[in-house]
Length: 131
Image (cartoon, rainbow, N blue to C red; front, side, top):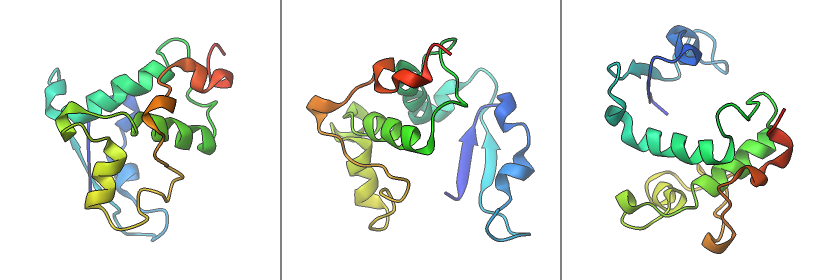
């Protein structure tokens, strides 16, 4: 990803570290830009994903250190398999596959989940909640 658009949360307080490549020392992997304070509409699609993620990992009940890479791939698969009106009824996985190089979406283990099997509740990762 060439650009990261985010809010000013503490997890994004070191833009130089975020921009720095760990694979190619001394090279920049992306550019970090911040939305204006109190303007979540500037990154609406990200806010939608945040809302969907919070359905699985609710604030105050989830330990974000607990999910494994496999848990995150499962979570991303479910969140991105749910159709969005903003994408003409398509799901983000299909939209990304239409735009990105072949295999790119699959790299982190993201797969399309059939709509009738999509779970957007904490029960998707029962071991990652109530810690």
